[in-house]
Amino acid sequence: MDNPNYKSGFVAIVGRPNVGKSTFLNRVIGQKIAIMSNTAQTTRNKIQGIYTTDEAQIVFIDTPGVHKPKSKLGDYMVQSAMSALNEVDAVLFMVNAAEKRGAGDNFIIDRLKGIKAPVYLLINKIDQVKPDDLLPVMEQYQTALPWKAVYPISALEGNNVDELLSGLVAEMPHGPQYYPEDQVTDHPERFVVSELIREKIFMLTREEVPHSVAVEIESMKQKDEDHVHIEATIIVERPTQKGIMIGKGGSMLKKIGTMARQDIEHLLGSKVYLQLWVKVQPNWRDKASLLKSYGYRKDDL
Image 1 (cartoon, rainbow, N blue to C red):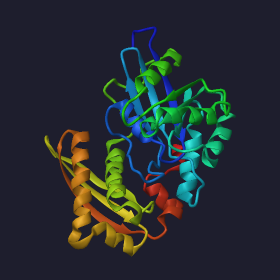
Image 2: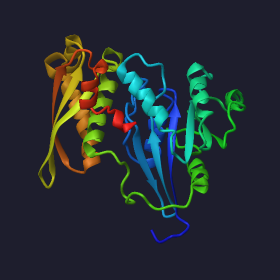
Image 3: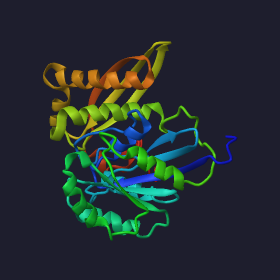
Image 4: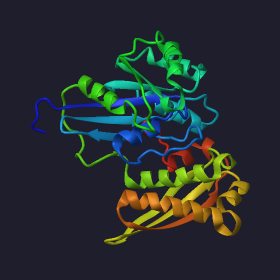
């Protein structure tokens, strides 16, 4: 990068589950790299999205929603979220405009008090509240921390997102372009493919099969110039969940496959043949060896 005025930096996004962090990241990057669901705690790993312009590059780190852990997987998710605050150039603390400040927000605010990076307050989902109701929400957080800036935004509609990006770029240090301009994430394609399949499972099964699902890509092969063959296993904890996942005559599994394939084809730019299996692995969320094999590694923290 020859431009001596070029700016680059790393920005962590933290917040309670389901405040819209993944929606925001996908909006900024311009395509889907983080899965979205109305189910809380959908994001399990730190997902890096890369925003690049002629003047700057910002690497956003989308973290799992911070919550009270109930399993080893839950512990991993919270550790993952909080570790993202180390060595970043800024932190975006996102809250939901349609919800009152709660214990989860206070927990995160307490953790943010100890970090050196500037913290921005993002009040998301302003499209869900009346303008007159926004001021009381802002007042709830006004004195909680010395915010670098406060941005009411709608990640879904795009309101004020460009203004936020301009503000962030202005504060980033001068530095190199870390990634090629056409790269939008540092995660391998296999990871994003597994996340897209997991998103469709959340979407179609809702609360019937909550957080006891993992997706393992068994193989991903380019068959020719225009076709990719993918084999993936959906892991659940109980036989009843396997039945729900397969559905009557295989109908649910077919729906999951059809919807996921469309997103994967968009991601890869190729025709995709997707084959799915379902496997029962009791209590996998509390078994360290299985967590590691499904992609949740302490080394990532």
